[in-house]
Length: 294
Image (cartoon, rainbow, N blue to C red):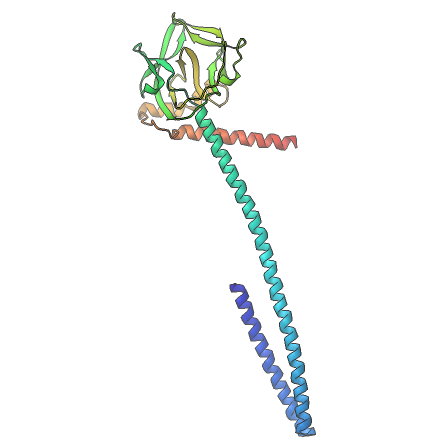
């Protein structure tokens, strides 16, 4: 609007200048013709020239107005096109942000245990995971008949609504495997028996269950025996217990100096950072794979 006003003022000033010059020219011609031919002829010629000048001025004004209209229409068209592009970009970013948020929440909600699962403390007490506190020493492994206990150093988050289909457990070869990939009658996992031993047993049945609460915590050993099953704390990550122990090394060292007090539904910042980074890495790999296939 400011552009069109400035352009209109310039055009108006130019038209006024041309009109003054035309009037001066006609007056000179009138005076000269009046001196030679008389006033009647001079007046007729003056009126004819004035009519011709007004016709040309109107034509020029119409052309200038049309140019202004064309310029403004072109600008409006470009702005509409740009607005459409920005709207599509905003829609894509909104959808992408929602997708990433859902994936992050999905990852967050899958890396947990049911709080009713039981663990054994070094004191011999059997408690539910919901009762765990920072510093509790829980049964994390059994080697050569000797029970090993490890400190709980971090409670990443607690909350509601969980389906733990992607939690890692240890198979008979001490490899970690998604719970959803266990095969009844085929996969053997490690469970503890009454003689303080980890023994391989076949999975006999798998069911998916919704629970209304969950808890995610970590021991310095990176493992726990929950409800008798030898399980990893790590989930939806590279299938390497050693690698994940190294990834969590900074927070393990930090909590030696400053014990964690985090116990809430919001994911612990360090764990949130790791999951976001891993999710971004997965998305980059998927895009690279699509580009390679295309």
